Length: 93
Image (cartoon, rainbow, N blue to C red; front, side, top):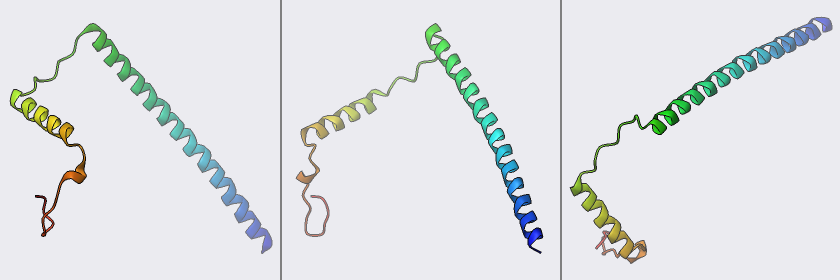
């Protein structure tokens, strides 16, 4: 009976070692393939930028630019949030 238990432990230990080795090989290949694809994508992007073959983003709406600039200026004038006061109901005044 003891030999059966020892044999099962050895068998499952060997099976675990083989599966870990197999999964590590597969994972390693997937990582290498992913890095190679990323490298080629980056090379293409750099090539397009250097050649100037890319589309510029849309121009920003002037009205949105005005609102963003006014919000930025307002935040620069009073960046401290503790300046805001609340009334008795807890709402900002």
